[in-house]
Image (tube, rainbow, N blue to C red; front, side, top):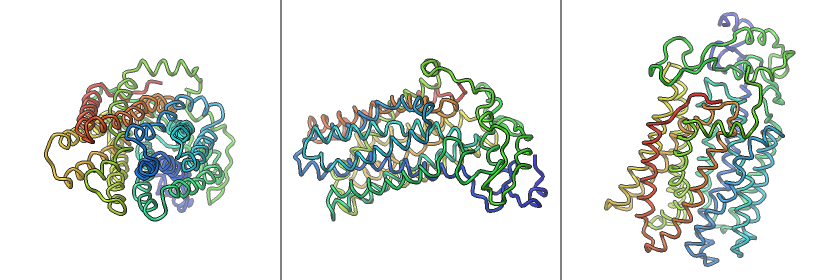
Length: 499
């Protein structure tokens, strides 16, 4: 381990690393934050394109005389396409790399959104365009997982991944807050042109700064940061061990300090821009696990594991409520008396603003708890239970209790923002159980989670027509799903490494 005094004498500091094991220059910018920031923006843009239709459809329905049933179909059409490419992400990443996979997919998704206003007069055409938007965006989360497993050190993975994933909430906030104002003053068509046009700037940033491996980043990376990123868990504690892991290093195992020492000696540029890296660093990534298993064998092994099966059930039932509310929430707000314009913007955005705070705080707390020796599975289970229990309880209260409109809105804010707990909980399990095949685990998980994204909005539209715009059946069904997910997660969730 480096001596802090020696590190300071050589112009190195530990402030950027969060650890004195891998000191870096005082004003060095940690390169892993490039993926945090640009990945955050990518998910932000992806969710803007996904969610924008939920607000614009209010005006589109009036202009083109859409029924509630067709409205449900239109809201679900994105997920029909989104489902189809979830399992293709890992093979694409392995073949052409994660950078190219996400660049091509998300850029095409942005371009397709520009055609929604042109297609809107035709029901067939507008559904087709939304399906294409979903197809091209389906690789987003699995590819991001593939990259995060290569860019984020284990001891910071929960907090950095949570920061990246909150881009989805911020994208939703921007759409929910800004789009009603655009609709009121410029028209719904301009919303697609403004948001999609702005999103194209992300493609430029991604193309310039992101690489498949952090060692190749264009502005150089300090060898100590690279050693920190490549730090691995030499052994993961079994879930049968005590709730608190004793001993220094606890959850994260031991560190190969010789790599860090050698890398420190090789550092030459004071600004961290260029280095002497004679050792092939690809060999450091994955340690002794560089043997690639056939894709379908990986899928087979994962699908027979308790950890992934539990995650799939949790994703299935909680995504039912999340996606249904994501797409129908603005419509529901209007039904309980929220006025279009600034009031709708505020209540649209509020739960997602709180979600950003919850996701980031829970990610930081999760890493700190595990660093102090609290078992990873305990952290993941608590956050997963909160993700399912809170919405389940409050949906039943809204469905069956006589509440004022303001109370219902307050409860709905609590319901929607509770999804923020999943960022450092169930979502992290896709990285926990298979860091090497994180794209596969996320692809399978998202594939299952997308099914209710298709069925939920469709069934909601049918139920609203059948029960005279009553939401009781929709909320009680979603509440039951959420509660069952919390119970199954508590009993069977696992974070032990499978592959």
